Length: 304
Image (tube, rainbow, N blue to C red):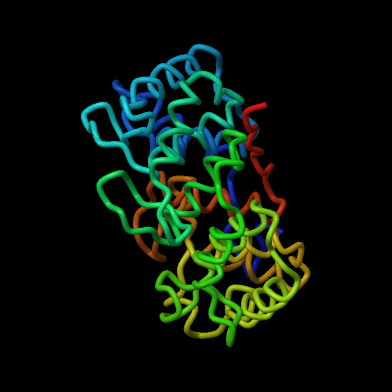
């Protein structure tokens, strides 16, 4: 899979993917200057078999420390002084790929997430916004897992909150509690959090597998494939891995679908078919290839 043929002239060029990030970011005078770009860089090059060199790694660790705010959370860049669960999670994930979570003040970060707990069992975006959501609760569970501090979560209460986003008639999860259209990304977020909390039950798993297998992203593509997105494809792959049910995929067709987002001239991926490539979408495409086993899937190293 991934090789070119007469029917399928597109071939993934992994060397070009590596060069894309090196040309784009190594030549960037102030890089790292955003935790989002730093995450793209670290994840992608690790998947391509290139962990950062020691000098580059130390620069990135210093940048991460610079982003930590007095409340223990992290901001997106040095100019922004407001922390959020989103960018705190991005930072911890990036450090985990470099086996370097202990390079920041982990005690303050744990306290930061404790301050985001809401009465309904969820977690908020930051201290100012008191409303919990599925994605902000995912960021908290993911981060506290990396910090080895899941004990501060009321697991049963948080799991009950997360299950409120499942549409039991379909088995998928949606962004809006008890209503809305289920999708692969929110299904992944819900499943990941429940599994990490140790509360992903068999019935929820069966419904989720049925939902994911019923979508075009399992390989059931048709003429409407151009309305489908790279993001949903990748989250379908991640969710099925969590469920240990990748056998429902038509992997050959999924690879062909991923190629429709690939921009051979750049060795990178676009978020939408026919558009220009970007670091975020290239990281997403690389994640898809890693989920399919065509690249190494980077492993997060939590705090011991």
